[in-house]
Image 1 (cartoon, rainbow, N blue to C red):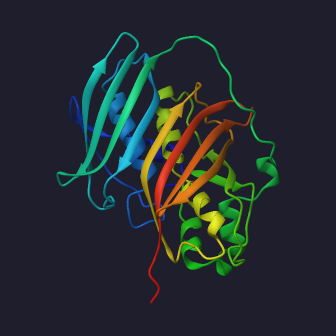
Image 2 (cartoon, rainbow, N blue to C red; image 1 turned 90 degrees about the vertical axis):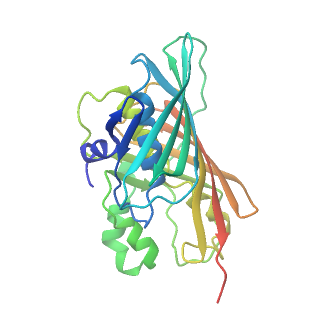
Length: 288
C-alpha cells in the first residue's frame, strides 16, 4: 500500500446492515493489525450512522486484543444519543465474535465561538530533512533488524523526523519527538469525513516510540514489548491533508510498564488540526 487512494479503500468498510460493517487489514510492519487502521475504520463505521452535517470532534478507544491480519474485522455501531447538535456512537470491533477493540465517537454540527491555540513549534522544514524512505535507502544495511523492517515497509505517507538519532548510541534521549508527515498522491475533493479518517490512521504513529526515548540507553524494540492500550483524538479545526503536517509529541510519564504520550498535529501554516493522547504497554522483556 503506497498511495492515499489505496488507504482510503482500506478504511472504507463493506456495509452489511444499517449498523454493521466489515473490513480487512494491511501489513504495516507488524505481525498484528496496525492500531491506526482500526481507529480509522471504526470512525468510518460511526460516520455512516450520523447526519452528514455532524462531524467528529472527539473519539476515545481501547485496544483489547491484538488483531489478526488474516481475519476480517466486524464493526457494530450502537446509537447512544442524537441531540440537538451532538451525536454519540459506540463501536465494537470483533474477529470471530471476540471483541478486540472498542471506541466512542462524539459528533457535532458546525458552530461558531471563541478560538485560541498554541503556536506551532519552530523546527526545520520538511525540505531540510530526510525521510524514512531515504533512511532505509542510505542506511538500511546498518540498521538494527526491527528498525530496518519497520522503515522499509511500504506506506501511503512519508515521515521526516526533525530529531534523527543514531540507534547504535545507547544514550537516553529527550521526552519529545517532532516529525513531519505527508500523504502520498492525495485525491482531489476529499470529504471532511474521509480526511478525519486519514488523520485518525496516521495519528497512531510515533507515540510509544517517543515514550521509550528517555530510556534509550537500555530499552529498544528488541528488548521491550510495546502495545497500544488506549487512544484519543480531539479534532479542533477543519482538516487539511494536502501538504505536510507536523506532529509534535511529548511523553510526560512512564510508570508501571505503561508509557503515556500526548501530541498536537499542525498544518504547515501553523493551524492546530487535532490533539492526540495515548497510553501503551512498555514492558521490559525478560532476559535469558
